[in-house]
Amino acid sequence: MNRTEFIIATAIVLFVAFSLGWFANWLINRFTRISKSEVGELDKMAQALHEAEETRDQAITYLQQREAEMTNQMAQTEAELRAAMDGLRDARREAEELRTYIERQNAG
Image (cartoon, rainbow, N blue to C red; front, top):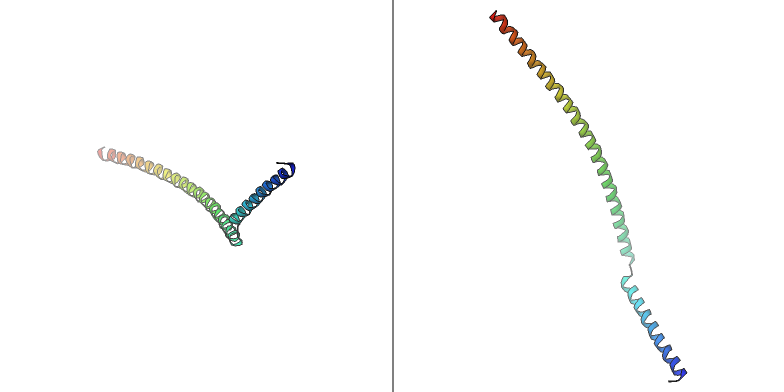
């Protein structure tokens, strides 16, 4: 094989390799190309996701506010219960003292 034949053979091999590479690239682009309808669908999905995240954030904020309100209401109710229990305890003690006083008055 002389020099000219070697150059021609090398050129043919390189051309075939280039052609195969170009064809493979064309095939990959053909199958992975995104159509306009798919882009529109992706935009709709992104918008829906954004709206869902906003709704979630609003729900979390509402739940935190509601939890704070309920905690405050529970603390107030517990304070009222303690006050009522203290009043009941005082009333029972006073009733017992009156009962004892009346029994002494009746006995004596």
